[in-house]
Image 1: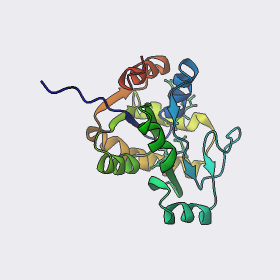
Image 2: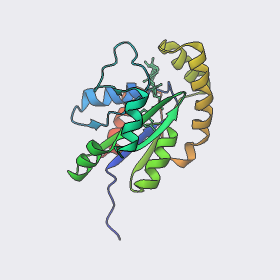
Image 3: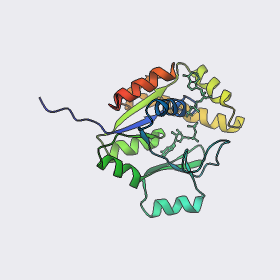
Image 4: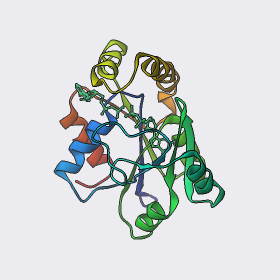
Length: 187
Ligand SMILES: Nc1nc2c(ncn2[C@@H]2O[C@H](COP(=O)(O)OP(=O)(O)O)[C@@H](O)[C@H]2O)c(=O)[nH]1
Ligand SMILES: Nc1ncnc2c1ncn2[C@@H]1O[C@H](COP(=O)(O)OP(=O)(O)O)[C@@H](O)[C@H]1O
């Protein structure tokens, strides 16, 4: 039997408001050594978000330069803003044999699947549509227009679940964080 190929790059995707950031934050509280790529974005910071921690917040010109210089592993436009994964830090860690986690949207997940077929794609699903709406609205960080836009994207993302290797339903943050760590072979 062929030796098992251990996926070292894990991509976590799922609709806005499903709880990706919450799960990742919990996971890193339990296992601070797990490295999460910090994306660049043209979105404005939410209260409490810090440059270099949650995102590298850049303007349109700076984002254009990142693309032109080939510094992004993938990038996509989501609900009116651009988001991209800095290539260097990800490749450096993979070269060192360290597990790497990307929290990116569906378009980004598809691009990673093309360029790095060994990556494992994990879809985070809500327990129900109503619960997704409740979480996105309850977070209180977006205007009604932006919430509407994100719910439109959510419909598209939910329809693509079968493209992923694994689905985790976010009922319990602790359970999902544990399952994700197991998939990443951290525990
Ligand atoms: N393709 C891609 N998507 C990203 C990247 N960083 C974040 N995203 C995705 O962009 C979407 C919007 O992110 P954000 O504005 O932080 O909203 P939130 O997911 O609702 O908290 C989410 O689906 C993120 O997973 C990236 O580097 N590349
Ligand atoms: N398992 C869960 N049960 C209940 N609420 C949750 C759960 N996971 C996340 N939430 C809440 O849902 C909202 C959206 O979560 P967030 O992590 O910001 O989502 P995402 O990063 O996917 O956009 C937040 O208010 C968060 O506290």
